[in-house]
Image 1 (cartoon, rainbow, N blue to C red):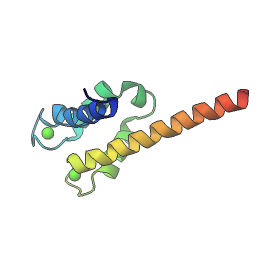
Image 2: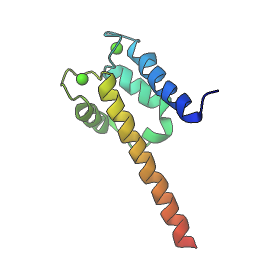
Image 3: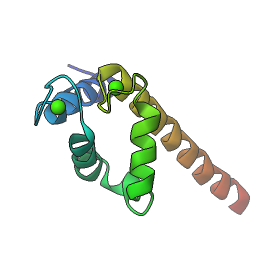
Image 4: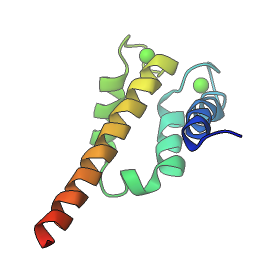
Length: 101
Ligand SMILES: [Ca+2]
Ligand SMILES: [Ca+2]
């Protein structure tokens, strides 16, 4: 049986290909594919946080080699960023609960 982390890693990889295959280069995520990924897979995360300018900024930041698409390496950086944002979120939560005590 797989552990939750193993399952999560599989989902992370599968999610990349689920969107990268939609159009153009099947091994890369273009802007339209990324937009769809964010809206469908991370709705709570992007809600009210990422507007059009934020999205352009995010794409530019992640696109290390400047080909305007995200390859798997660049996507992995995105996941790492998202994970660390999640971590900050949880830390803020524990700060709040600490203060209540
Ligand atoms: Ca593609
Ligand atoms: Ca790129």
